[in-house]
Length: 264
Image 1: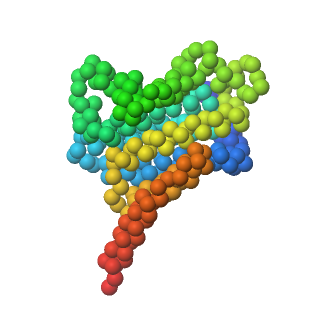
Image 2: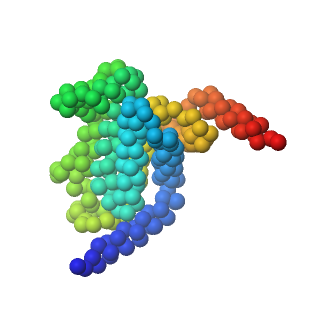
Image 3: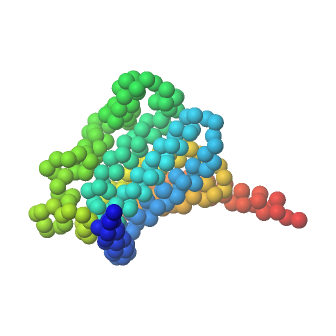
């Protein structure tokens, strides 16, 4: 059996990945997006430790965190390698999971219901549409922006339809390209959407899984600092810095405790 074609394809993907990273270095906004994605993934990974919990609700949340981490990783891998439609298709899953995590933040008893309800009842109560509707009602949102964002990924990336062909076309072309290709517009657009969803998902995950160890607190601080800069840069919103100051204070207190214990 010859796998030469797959080897050639992989070689081309790796070359595109290297060139994508080179170009991102010259796109300040894309570099900021990639930074917040990396910091968010780092915080998720940190909060997953330890995983030997006996609390089934906590374990369920951590599994959802793993799902978000893996989805973001797959999106980045595909996008940097020139698969913009396939990369964006992953984001619908990340967005759906972010909404579910958000739903749990207001009422943790919903986690057990989601785990234990019969399939038919769970689908009725926790379908993507039901979760979005509940969140919009909770927040008093009437514009249904959550649904619009979800539908955009369905239309452009996840579901086969005429509109999705646009993500298979290099800029300026009218024909779909088979295989990976390098396109600055596609690269920047998918990274921007990935960053937005990553911030939403990580925000919800960190509310449900508390940082306890020094490593977790330091990872949380790095994310909060990166998030504050990202939100201010792209949305003109200044985060409340008292939370960051509180985390810094906790970290310094932990470090002093460790230093005191190590004194002879």
